[in-house]
Image (cartoon, rainbow, N blue to C red; front, side, top):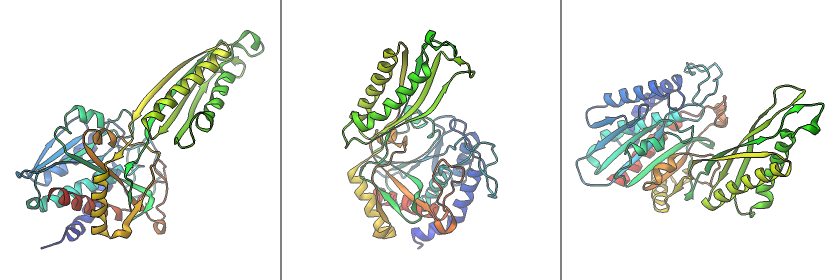
Length: 390
């Protein structure tokens, strides 16, 4: 009888091939037509044991029912790409101009397809039901997860699991964090309404540009002076726009920003402080401020017991040295929608390889990951599911 590792190695090249096809055909959020079609095709090629549905137009769900009583487990992989132009050079570079898998979602989908292929070989060892969720639109809030929830994919699910390839860890390392792993991910817009006019007569105007500058400067004190030192926040102004000519004072000044927090209390506090500062400074200068706060993804909060179980599985499968304790990270992740429905666990799977020059950060045109990590992801998923459903 072959071992799980031998079964994974036997399909490792196929998993890489699937990942490269997905990479070549990168598609943006809510536009994953070819991507979801390819995934469905590969699932149907695996045989008749899977129930395959489309919860939304560009997502896919495959359900494996064992026919034996047991837990209902969901495994999630995201499938969308980013609006980034990929440099030419790779033989499997994106064929879609201005669209690139620069966050590893092509790898996540390939790992999940490989997991299903190996798990089907071990179907007789399982009890309960597995739902494999290929989720669209992770990159654009409110995201695809919430649409899949509305379609009922999580009804009756007991536990949900996911992973993310990362170049912050070397290949072979598994990043583990008990409790909050990722941040609440929010955005905001402030539009300062002043009174435009000729630049030669500023006294007749209410110039929104210096008012906007005052607001930007004052917002930097939210973290340093308005919150306690133990409240972790990242607040950034990322986009500003105003004016149409060098000699015209504009009517408006607009800015957009990002807020990352870990707790609900801090999230609400920062939301209120931004509005208080923006509206107060605008009013003090005879202007008004239109403030909108857009709540995005909730934090991913790993269940303590499931974290311990996954840690044990990794130690037994890959050795205790493969484990890397992690602190919470600021990037957001809409896996939190799924884990808000039941207990969940999400980990960071190392995919950096300095010897191969694969260390570039996510959301970067130079991003690429070590494909050796794909087989590790498949083996981890299969080992975890056999532990939970065996």
